[in-house]
Structure formats: structure tokens, C-alpha cells
Amino acid sequence: MAGEINEGSVPAYYREVYEAICCRTDERVQVEVFQRLLQRTDLSKAVLGQIAEHVDSTDGFLSKLSLYKALALIALAQQGKQPSPKLLENCIQELPKPQLGEPRDLNALRMQPAQEDVLTVSQTLDKLLARDTVQVELIPEKKGLFLKHVEYQVTSQRYKVSVYRRYSDFDVFHEVLLQRFAYRVVPALPPKRMLKGVLTSVSEREFIEGRRRALGRFLNLVARHPFFSEDELVKTFLTFSGSDVQTKLRDTYKKMGDEFMTNRTATLAKEYLPADIQAQFSTSRELIRNIHNSFQKLRDRAEKMAERSKENATDLLMFGRELSTLGSDASSLPSLASSQSTWGTLRQSLKSLSVEFAVLSDKAAQQGRREEDDVVEKLNLFLDLLQSYKDLCERHEKGVLHEHQRALHKYSVMKRQMMSATVQPKEQASVEQLESRIVQQENAIQTMELRNYFSLFCLHQETQLIFIYLPITSHILGAFVNSQVQGHREMGEVWNELQPKLGCLFGGNNGLRPPI
Image: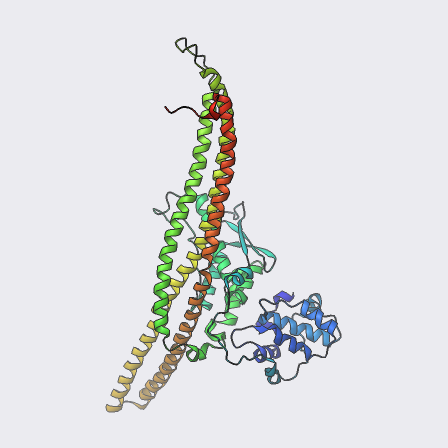
């Protein structure tokens, strides 16, 4: 199928064309550049329109795989064939070569701004949210002959496909994603099992539902990330319907390697970094830490409010049931009761009130669910992102920086050994071996320095991502206010309907009694 095109299955010419025309700011191709490429084919406008129709683009860009698909369709059209995905399926094993000239001549097609700003992430929250929405639903039955496990249906709006995944599939996906994008914010997965002694108050059903929600947040953050979203690993997880997605994910990662190996600006990152990058990083990190703390407190309060709404629903329902129980008591009144007592009539009327209280209970429960789905869940989404940023900062300090320092220490030890060897007579072979090791260590240090700068480069971009997400605050507040307005209005309507009934039951004053 056309969707199975991957970097390892295309002719070398495809990769050369991609390298010639892709953006320097990221790994995609601008639609305008692609349109210029189409004009070089000498195909009719009708055929060019058909090719463009079959090629996906997002935010004015084509992904690498979309370009490869387009090149194959161009080649088919140049052979006089119909450029359709169905025909492309038949030649997927040996893709045809389009006639576009020498790749080096295609460089002129690339749009080159006067001054490229590769460090800036030019996105808005609305654009990121529009990239994809992924639903994660629980499959009711548990699979497995001996060991039971939970299965999830994962549906991507972008790819318009549903696939089935186990937690272990998520685990492998997270593992390879972290290996490929070690210098970016990769959200954590929820725990696989309940932690004994910690979650004892949570039922298994509640734990599974909480894990489902967390997996959904994880996928949505990944699918909307400006760099992850165009990566083949993400597309594979969201669309691959084969029997072994874990092997497919690992194979996909092996073909690509980590981002440092594939990003065009990786070895040039130092040139794009501002002189005060460390000061900017420290300031931003402290600010984001404070934001993280505040949002944790907001989430905790929102959770309590949602829980109170649910408890209110339970209390209203039980209150109505007790009224019904009281009204259903058919016992006769004792003789000592006053002949003026209206309890007998009143008691019979109480039973009907339980209906209104059941409605009130339902409205309160609905408000609790809204607060949980629209307020708490959005807060948790942003908190997951903030936590992943905190984890990234720790990876940068404990990983790249420490490895660099260890490499420098090892290099200094080797240099001292070399100086000692030149002073004291040593075998020529051992001296040459030491020289070779020093050269290897120098190369390793150079690579680590490049990785350190690239790590800072990515960290700068991921910091921007946090601030791009900050307007989610208005989404959260809007959802909270709307939920409160709707809940109070709906419950107010039921209370207002109930009040006149009290007047009919108890007589006069519209159901209001004198103070006791």
C-alpha cells in the first residue's frame, strides 16, 4: 500500500531530491516548493491536480513520506499511467524513478528566507490542537488465555483509522520515542499496575479508567507535538494494523536512529544558539517550575470540586430515597396522635418528591463528570507536559553534561599517561595504541560537545512549546465557568419546579413554613 512507503524502500534518487528541496528549518517540504517541482514535470494541469489531490500536507508542508509518495505518482504519470494510490500499490516493491533532472539543480526551488530562524517554533496552541485528536477507548473484554490483559482502541482523527493496542505496545512506543527524541519533552506513561500500599483506596476499575485517560493524554501530546507529529514512529503507532507493532516500532527506529543523526541542524546547533542561552534556560526553568506548582494546586482543587459534585449527587439521591421510604410507611397512626395531625396525608405525599431529588442527583452527577472531563482532564494534560519538561531538564543535566564531563576526565587521564610514556621508555606498540585511544577519545568528546549544543537547541525549542501551551489556561477557565453556569441553571430549574409542589403539599406560602 502507498501508506507503507518508508525511507528504506525508496530509490536513492528520492532521498537526493528530498535533500535538495526540503526546508532547512525542519525536515519537511514547503507546499510552494513542491508546486515548483511539479512545474518541472511537463505534465498537464489536470494530471498535476490529480497528483496534488493524493498527497497530504499539513500547515503548508509535506512530510518526507508524502514527498516520496508524490515522486512515485509523478513517475507513474510520466510513464503515461494514471497517478493513483491503487496503481502505486502494485509497484511498492520497486518504485519508479521520476524524470526531474539532477538533484543539485533542484536546490534553486527551495525557498530561502533572507534570514532563517531555525530556533523559533512558529506555532500557536490552536494549530497544535488541530493537528490531531486521538481517542483511547477501553475494549470491554479482557484478552489472553491465562494472563488477562486490557486492550485499547486507539482512533486518530488525522489518519482516520482505528487500531488496537495493549499497554505493552505503549511501553515499547514510549521506549523508542525516548531513544529517538532524547532531547525533547517525551511525556511519561502511567504505571502499568496499581502500586501496593499507595493506591489502596482506588478500585481496580478506577485505576484502569485513570490509566486509560492518562494514555489518551500521552498520545494527544505526542500527536500534536510540532516535531513528533511528523515522525514515522508516531504514524506507525497510530496506523499500523499488523500483528506485531512492537517489532515494527523497533525496526522503524533502527532505520532512522536518534534525532541527532537525522536533524539537518544538529551539527550546526551552536551557531543558532544565543550567547546567553544558559541564563535564558535558568530563568525559564524557574518560571516554569513556579507555573508547574500553581497548576498542581489548581488541579487538586478542581478534583475536590468534581468529587464534591459527585458526593452531592449521591446525597441528593439518598435524601430522596429516604423521603420515599418515609412516605411508603403504611403503619397506622397511634391513638395518642392528635386528631388535628396531618401526618397521614403528608406522609403519602412525600413519596412523590423522590422523583425530583433523583433528577437533582442526576444533574449534580452530570456536573461532576463535566468538571472531571473538561476541567480536571485539561489541567492534567498540561501538567503531563510540564512534568515531561522537568524530566527533560534533568536528562540534559544528568545525561549529556555528565557524559561530557566524564569524557573530558578520561581524556585528561590519557594525556597524562601519554606524557608519562614519552618520558619513560615504552614499547612502540603500546605508545601507538595509547595515541590511537587518545584520537578516539578526542572524536568522542567532539561528538559529545555537538550533542550538548543540540540538546540546548532542542531544550530552547521545548521551552517555547511550554509557553505556546500556556493559553490552555483560558480553555480551562472557560470550561470551568460554563460547567458551573450550566449546572446551577439546570439544578435551579428543578428546584424552582419543586417549590410550588411544596405549597400544594403543605398548604399556603408557596411551600415556605414559619421559622421553627
